[in-house]
Length: 309
Image (cartoon, rainbow, N blue to C red; front, top):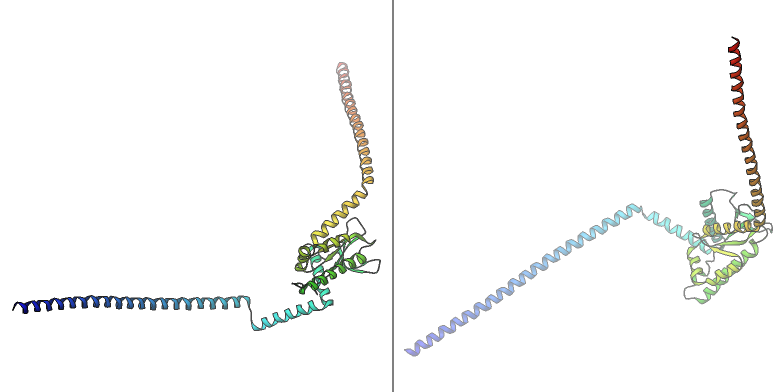
């Protein structure tokens, strides 16, 4: 009987242990399932939020794109016209004559922008006495000479100079030829001792200044100043002022004589002023004395008249 009770008790303990283990496993499984459901729910919510965010961003980008297009007024027809304009500009760049005309047009536009349409300040297509025609001439104040400006556009080899030594060498030769052509054609008895070479491209001008400074030195030796759209007027005005100062220094002796003569005239004028002032003071004194005499005579006549009465 005792053995039976022991066996039964041991069985009950085993059953209870098994039930406890099953309960723990069930709890862990439920926790794992709940966690999985929670993770899946969070993922679904995040996916939905991301989708909504993507849709919102795409809608905003599309809206801004449409607004930009409407603002710019870009249509297929306008894009076609832009392409036509680009092709036209390309035709100008590859045609020497058209390219030269473009440089001249840019030069004329800048001159008219600064000076208006005034032939007393500048002239275009100016004829020199040697038969040459320079693109533009600035008249020097107080002088019958002009400052010659000629447009040059050395773009042929410039477009190929990246890592191309042959193109760089050819570009230098082009610019040197332009420099010496201007010096030989547009500096003479009709002009001042310098001339301007106008390059209508800031990119080419900056490249020369930064990478080919020897060309600047060679131009200076030839009395040619290289300019661009942003530097043309500054260089021109500076050169005109220097020329005026030089003219003034040449006439310095005559100016000094005129100043001395003016000083002598000023001294004489001061002397004459002092004489006139002294004369006026004398007249004033004599006038006062005459007044006193008149009053005395008048008083005396009055006394005589009263005595007779």
